Image (cartoon, rainbow, N blue to C red; front, side, top):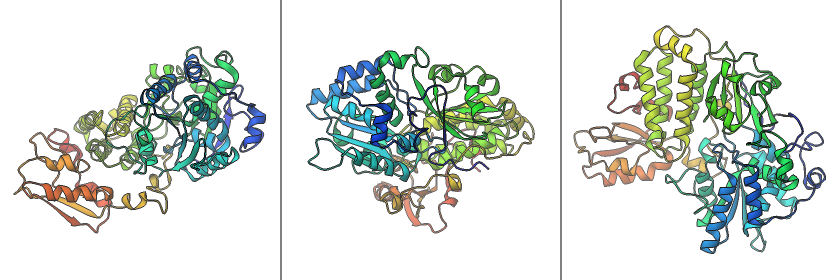
Length: 537
């Protein structure tokens, strides 16, 4: 069984270090050491900074890959148009069990990240800088870095800067979740698509980007676009930070120039010479098979071209000796647990998808496979955030990459290989649900209530699905697809409102004392579809 990765695993570099400069000298670059290694940094104007980001083709390193210069210009233009001060947010949330590159950067080179963020803040006239983190180690390191620079959250400060600590949850790192938490709400997506560049923290235009992105900007600002472009590929210059784990002898974070063969990176970490497959981009990423690994190079475009994804920079090979579907099932179950629980595609769809993959492994046959495909299709582009989309992409990639293994399970008696648990998960199989003593702990606790539908009274008004989408979805006949389900702790007030507003008085709530685990058997997986029998065990 693969152990959880430490916050700061081994760090390696291919070629000359940029982001990891000085890592061979000290464990953490405080401000004096940071200046010795990297030198001073001159301020830049807003348009000058945007042109720099455009010239080096800098894209967000958190997974989405949005061009940084477009985001920077959008925030600046909105701020000028509205006559308000923008906000700068460094997203240092790294909540996938297989990702550590941003955590390493914050723990070991926090001032490089702050350099990039402060460049942007000064160029745009921002008066607020927030660094969002989820780990105790990153909180300590970044708070120390702010103190070393004399930055604080004092009202008298020209720039108010502080660290926002959120729970370790997969959905916490979404931009909307980060902004909502900074504004004093829970660290979950608000359920509506809002552009941070237009309406972010406190309603102000907000420049929010990944920690590595700001560090890359700081490097480019020091050495210039021409020298920056001498490293890596012409169309994707510079280096990238990767976290390599899974079936490797030496899990590590590694800085590599773009264009390096993926197989070379795997060799450095001690991966099998011929892996059965490699998961690229993390748990919202895509699998590539062994033959494709030899074609791939480390770049966003190359990995996209071979069916992979750079994503959050996680690279995870598995051996020929393990069942790839079983390995993927563990991840699918974790992804389902990480739901924010506030929309049907996530709260209902992801557990359904995990059970669908489990049904395939348990001999469900072609019907189970078709049902899984249908569930994955149904959850995409319908969620309150990108978590259902990323999870569905992972499942669809699993089906596509391991066709031989899939055929053995669907058409035969299985592949006969054990599940070794080589893909890292947090201790206990999932992430902590909150910070001890934090406000999130109570609302993320075990469900205490169950809501019931009285079919003798229900008339299919559908109001319950509008008020409580975490629990209720409407089937093709217009009626709820569940007769009973557990109510997430944070949704108890909404459940009570649904009961009170049901025109037919067909809903009731009862306290449940059996615990959260039993609720899984009460949830539907498909409504009015041919796969329901296969998945709804």
